[in-house]
Image (cartoon, rainbow, N blue to C red; front, top):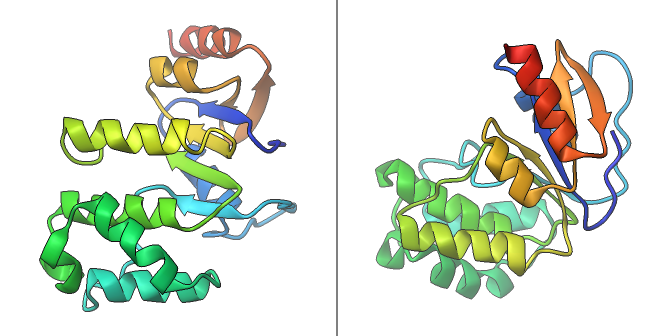
Length: 192
């Protein structure tokens, strides 16, 4: 699989085909047992993934921690994360008291604050209420339209709307399609 800067690539396939594993491999969360992964861009963790948060730390402290890992200045990112996440005073509360929606908002805001060349999206993001969801789509697909994206989804309409080409994953193997409609038709035929 190759992805160029600015390209939006979809990955589709049945449950258990290996799509989420592929995302973890690309993002560096897992190491391949065979073969190599060559990265020529900075690559995000899966957008809105909050599994890396330290539950005993506040939202603000988690932001500091993540910024240090990625060589970013937390002071430069704080105002964006505060404004975008809409968490208010909860940013200074431990993550362990956050609802899943609050964690997702913080994770999405931090994901957007760190400047990655390629964004990983594992399944359609439904972050918060309809207003916040619309704001998130605007931030991701309009303000960051120049970024590369790898989008894993079972939602074929989402893939059609956002991707210029797609890969079909079957039994851990990828098949490239330069035509998204052809990838979807092949996937549907395999599912029948």
